[in-house]
Length: 593
Image 1 (cartoon, rainbow, N blue to C red):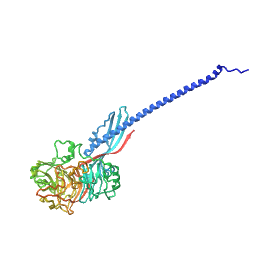
Image 2: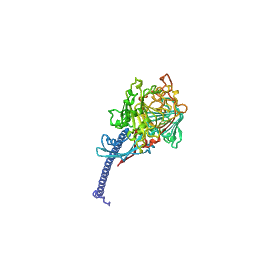
Image 3: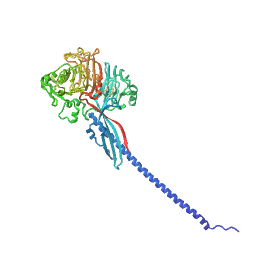
Image 4: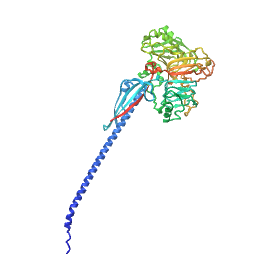
């Protein structure tokens, strides 16, 4: 008998529970997948939102950084007059950028302090330092905010802190041996070549240094620069042979980085002039239309003795000059006649090939007059303005100022003050004999050009320079801010054909005598040139046929014992009217989160 076969019903009854469990499992898995997918989507959305927030936060932070840079550039422009004032800070404008608005706070942090610069390309100089903080907040359309704080130092450096300061190209190419003590700076390029020149301090330019002449191919091996240990090391490279970082490396190796250019981080130093103003403005006469900013710059407006003289009345200057002393006493007619002497066609200037029409100031007579009442007769700056020039009239064609008997300057008006005297004119200035060598005072000349005449100078000397033997030693202790004679172009640049040599730094103070045979001109001060001469325009080395038939050179170079006057490092010892240059240095940067 065969066993009974199971029915379909009993078989179906055993499988039903298994099929129910599978369905539940599938539903459970689907639910779990749904949760995971939802969670994933939420995470993606959250990540997207976070990324968007981070992106916008970064955007606003970058915008704030850009705004801080904009304000720093405004501060840099404000330094064009050499200082940062409260008005400059108040005048700072908020940056603008599409999609953002800015909140800015620019504030000084403490009073300006005169101290030695300890870092950067101008470390070692003394400046008036104004620390400042720039806080900039950038806000986008969704109110995302980014904030940064930029700390800067506005450095105002007196120009006479430099041994040499040039606004334009500086050429140093002496034939006679020359050792110069003092910082040398140019806002343009430098050209240095000589058989015997030594620099005892730093050399800086935001442009380039060329070990060559500007007007011709001449590279001499006698240029030396002191390293940090005071050892004179030969210059054997320049901005052409070592570009970029190679220049910095070579300078560091040779001179402990005391020769620096733009690749070393040197920035231009702003002149004490409103934006767009010609630097010659510094020595121009007063003008009734001069605004406040111009008046702050001109020596003519800073002067406390402003003299106007029509050259037609030069023979009797005291009868024809107008004196503005701001209400202070002026000399009597007799005292004036002793101090001021007119000398039409006074002597022969071989470089300009003419005879200057000179207003002479006898510094000894001026000193005597002021000594009679130092407090009431004191003067810090004398400015002389010539009018009535007539190129067709020899006695009125070339007005100039000359100082004589200047070995000792007028006394101070107070035992607590060093005193000092600056002389300014927009015309040429001549100085005869020693100057400021007895009882030294802070002193400066501001003029179109400066010409030194030795202690042996005689107005009756012949046109032939060989008969004009200079004294064995003449000395001047005075800062100079004047025009120079520039070489027309760089012979290595395209389009420069037969350039005319300007004479270089060694002929910035001009000479007219025979200094051969070791005759010395000893100069201590600061040599500053901000422009090219406008009146004294004949080139260095002028060898045209001269008055009286003489032809050829008009001078032979002195032995130059020149140095920076270290007394100018003391702000109290700077000459009256000393201009300042400024720069803004970033000292710290931090984002605010």
